[in-house]
Length: 471
Image (cartoon, rainbow, N blue to C red; front, side, top):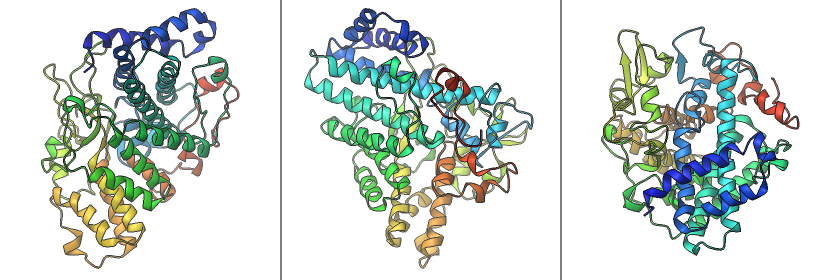
């Protein structure tokens, strides 16, 4: 168990590394940088504290992952048909809703830059850990193995979102500023290849790691990696592998289960949780509630809410309507209410959900349907429909066609995973349904809108990064 007295110093140390990942890094004296990395990786506890520092960064300062104003959850949700703004003149979120994001000089451009830069900061931190591990001769084999596996997963996880949101992006695998500062974009295919390499290595490295130390589901184990691996295979249309890897997670019945009480799903260490991020217990951003819970409080000044059209797709008998959708009667809007605590100062009751078992059932249902195993797909789909109090496909539509079943699965993905990590936006893109679904409600839609613009602040520092088409 990590001694908590190490956590805050290491967070500060990694914060230092984070600041030197930008322009100042080139001016840093090598002995100072060497001193920092050697201090972190001089023993097992401080090395593992470095990983804890990245976990904390994911919640606190990393805009892309913290569930707050510039996160994947909010911005990608706006890009789909799940969210809408409460004001037609909202200059931060309105352009995301209309898929008309500016690369420079506007509030929406700032949000886009915060997402981009925070993701690369996390990658920098993961690279720093990996380099520190490889250069250390003072760590136990166990620490080297666990820390490398977790750092590789974090890097792969972050690149998964970058490549899906921006397309071709620079593949940065070092902390060497002289290389990173001029790195051009790499093809999405090359980035995907590195993601796969990191995940495969992470799975092998974490093979012997305990499922969840002290019952906390905030640490990365092999099943966390397998869950993302299953998703990526689904995106790559490798149906056999998607089924195989999602099954590896689903089959861990002693660890994971679909909870019947919807109000229990997003609690800390929920048995449905595969990976969660905990509110930060130390440092300048200390809090006891999730950023999603705070952002989606449903107060009168809310700027991002659920679209009425989406809410209309949830039938009255669906328990998710009562348990996961809130309503502000004075302003007459709906809002996500998966997280119930957005303001308390008491004990932590909820963690930010990143990966959960329900998605694995949906992955396997789609993979099975695409392979013609309709009974198996129906069984997986009905697992979630049963919890939601919906009629079972096996009873009402036993002779359903493959095409209609796939449509049911897509609708179920939308109802189950709304307001979580931009699933709807990424689904529309991977299924090539963006124009079909979005053009009727977003008249300015163009096919090049499937990728966000590269922030001009980044291109000003590195002219080798070409702007995405359409911007």
